[in-house]
Every structure is written in structure tokens, then in C-alpha cells.
Image (cartoon, rainbow, N blue to C red):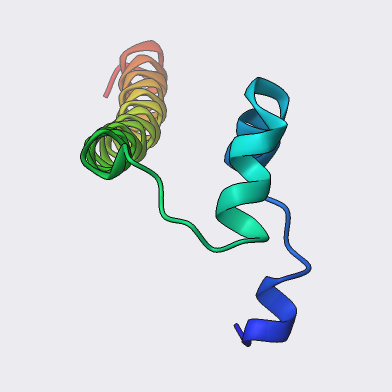
Length: 87
């Protein structure tokens, strides 16, 4: 994303920062002063990345579970049909 385009994007974290302290947001985004809490923010970003990977893994496992459930239902239906036919 170009610098001009990224300047138009307002992130949720920026809204939160502005809501919490408009002066802090102004100092960082308008004046360019870095935050004194860089370590905490880096730990927070890392924690969000880890959580995001866990959520993605959960959704993959959920899809696998549904697929296995459908396969089991299909095998059960075929088995029942064969049992009823006396094969």
C-alpha cells in the first residue's frame, strides 16, 4: 500500500487511541513523536498474531470435523441401505 493510500486508512487501534487520549494520538500521528510504550505494543501485536493463528486453526479443525461427520453419515446411510436390502 502506498504512503498516500495508507494515510487514508483509519485503524481501530487509532480510534481507540484517539478516544482514550486525543493528545496522544495527535502527538504520534501529526507530530510524529513515537510512543513510550513500544515494548507493550509489540507484545500486544504478538499476542494478537498468536490468537489469530489459533482462530484460523480452530476454523480448519471445525471444517474437518464437519467433513468427517458427513462422511460418517454417508457411510452409515450406505450401511443401513445394504442391511435393509439384505446384502
